[in-house]
Length: 142
Image 1 (cartoon, rainbow, N blue to C red):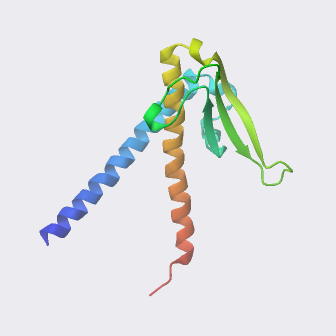
Image 2 (cartoon, rainbow, N blue to C red):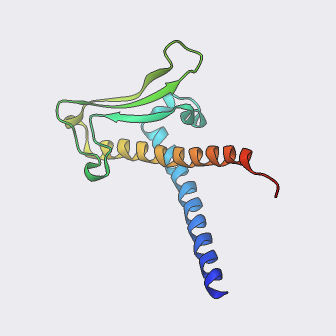
Image 3 (cartoon, rainbow, N blue to C red):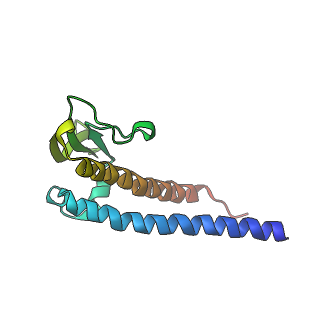
């Protein structure tokens, strides 16, 4: 009995930890959204999540080389929109252009990388909720 209770406590703590991290992430993400002037391209913070993805040119987003500058490239935040009714379904939108990657201030570059990782963190929760809701369709009354 104690083992089952311990597992339940562990799962509860993990879920609680994720929810706290998610709430904190959203606060920090919104601050970066304003600080990086993305609010000038996307007026409402919530509209940011209408994009399928947000990518970065000019620096790495891989965990083993996170933030590493790509020489000769320009640092730019690119959002990928999707319109299922359009002839060309996906569309890239520049959310921020910062010039030659190697000339961008290190602190600014780190905030840009952080913004994208924080966006992806929240977007992953939204995706999880979406598919969890879809799975409800397959539940049967037993």
